[in-house]
Amino acid sequence: MGPTSGSAHKPYLGSDENCLTRKKEKDSEIHGRQDRGVSIDCCDTDLCNMPVTMTTTTTTTTENPTLAPTPRTTHRPAPVSIHPTMGHIPTTSIYSNCNRDVAFLVDSSGSVGSANFNTALGFIKGVVAGLPIGPMGTLTSLMTFSTTPNINWYFNQLTSKQETTNALASVSYHSGGTRTDLALHSASTQLFTPEHGDRTHANNVVIVLTDGKSNMPSETVKQANALHIISHDVITVFVGTGPDMHELQTIATDQHHVFTVHDFHLLSSLQYQIHQLICSG
Image (cartoon, rainbow, N blue to C red; front, side, top):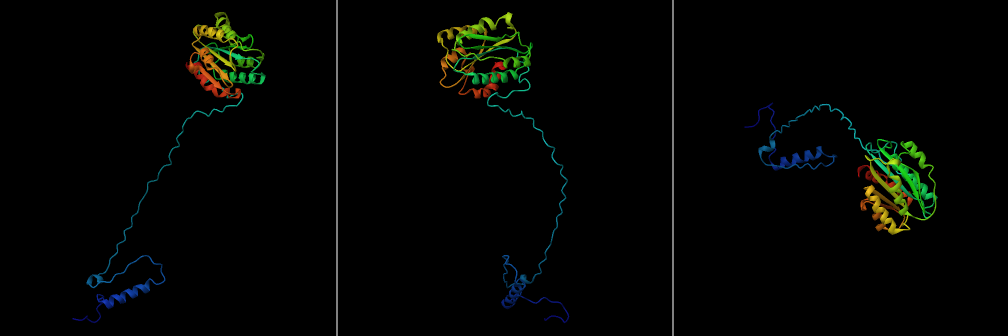
């Protein structure tokens, strides 16, 4: 039966001819558009005439406001800058509990020279600055040595950091030989004595700073052994090339108490390790 007049009837597009016609119409609609990879296929069933219903779903997402993260504060130690000559001079003591009597024996022989000698004093100034100088903390004494030893101050003469720093500025350079043995002997018999401020409740520490071998090696060994009875922390610091490691280790408590640098300007790089040995040894 044909269609009734006035009724809306969708024409049948299942034949090949109609299918081709539909494709041409579709091609005309997309004429001038950019190709989007749309594929149109012809079919010969009534399924081609089924209306296509497209459903559009709109999804609304409501995001909860996110609070800005609270900045995290990380406490890190301040970087330590090291001056090539004087070293980093701490403004406060690195160790608050360091009950020590520290004796500095500084080589003042002719091979050192006045400029390097002053650099060595700058290194000692840096070491002193990081120590809690005082009667209840660390006390120091200092001796220079060349052909003969020269005691600059005893443990009971300087009891503040400022006094010690000022005294370092007035230490004089004396050229001569390298009688390390005499310096070690004077430390044992003159520095570490009760009358000169050696305290029974404080550990004894010795720091020997030199640039060469002793003029009397056998006597140096003898005096080093005597000093080890008084102090269990004898540190040797050698500056230069070709160190006599046997002599340095003989003077020192052990190999972990021996330090070498090839230039006086590098002494400042040892301050942290020296502080550790003094106060944690």
